Image (tube, rainbow, N blue to C red; front, side, top):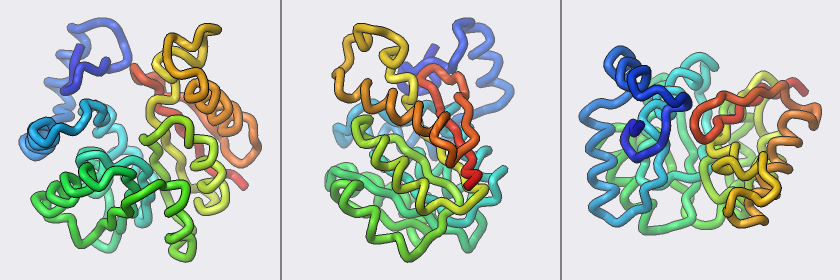
Length: 225
């Protein structure tokens, strides 16, 4: 059952999905416009689902965050969801590999009136994250980029999140590949990286972590030391 991109809601009953969308209303006109414009610009259909966007907003609000880091901007859909949760003096640093995607995201942030509270860093996040080290510690880090980079992004978050800060990571199930010997048909090196990421987050001692069983797996950890 789709919540805007063909992604599942996290359970298999379409009636429950339809009811949930009617009651919780994860989508609105502004978010729908981001998807339409991203599609028109030729961006890949890999943005977070509408319910995952709502999860992001609610979790960031619950954390009381002011300083957030996002790895994987795409067209700015998830960034807008995060920025809706931040206070007027909150700020989002978002990292995007593709200049084409970053241009769409910049337009998104301008159209939604949040451009003054976000900076897009273009290029490999592994190289560029160090640019903001002095601005930490951060309250929330959200990962939704190249899956092979998740272990490195987690290592950065271990050092630059505040104690009590939150790490969120989409696609943590690796489309089922993390639990299958054949990797589910996805690139083996990416699935191996996701396994290392999950094991480190859950067992590395820096976070108390859980898995939110969305269709694609939203890993969540609170930094404890």
